[in-house]
Length: 337
Image 1 (cartoon, rainbow, N blue to C red):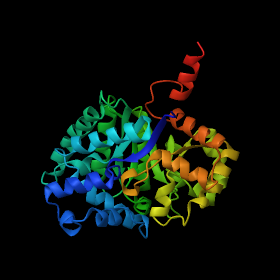
Image 2 (image 1 turned 60 degrees about the vertical axis):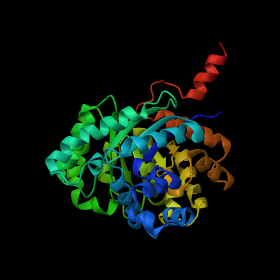
Image 3 (image 1 turned 135 degrees about the horizontal axis):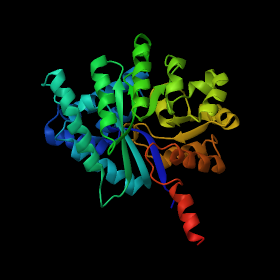
């Protein structure tokens, strides 16, 4: 059995449609009233969107129901599915903690409540029944205030038991006017000993070279090999890894078909830049991590040797994987004794 590491999965997009629909039905949510038939809800929830901005609206929908009291339900279902159906040995869960706090509170009180969000998710993710190594990546948000984003970095640095790094999300078109602040926050995070990743070079509008020197990994990054291959030697020298999420680019309209990823892999392998294959939003896509690998194989984007390289790269670039080797290599070395 092959074991996987998942480095890019959003809590807001991680819940499969049927589990979310059942939750909405129990709560009498307006969306359940609009889609009383599950098949119609699934079609609405998983259909491709016209743009990244339209796609991100679904995150907003889920964030509103992932309240503090509901988080144990969603996280426990995520961990169970990841263990049983995906053979995950390691999972990084990323989300914006501020967006899981009580919206009736003041900004200061919501900032204070973020710690409880982190701790609830961290404790729930540690399951004796489904033993996956987990870590959290806290997302800054391109449409939250500087005060909130700095508080997220401070929180990440003060919860090393549960949090290993930061990200920035929320729509890359909003980065431009805040780039100086984002660079400052990333420098601050690195000074605190945190790992860093960021949603960069996913779309043609999201190309911000100013932030590249301050990230350990690049969330998506596909426009680097596609449009800016001259940057690949710099990535290789910094040992930066791309978090490539194949189904996302079809769902957002960034690419028309998965075969368009072939030059991404070819150019990265040629330049010595690692790629970790990820799901991004397995629930929104209804596509789990093993099927992301399978889809790339069946469309001749990668071969089996490259698949193995990507699997091992995911463990090598994991922010909190506790063993120096991925589990497959560890088990092979143990069996030779």
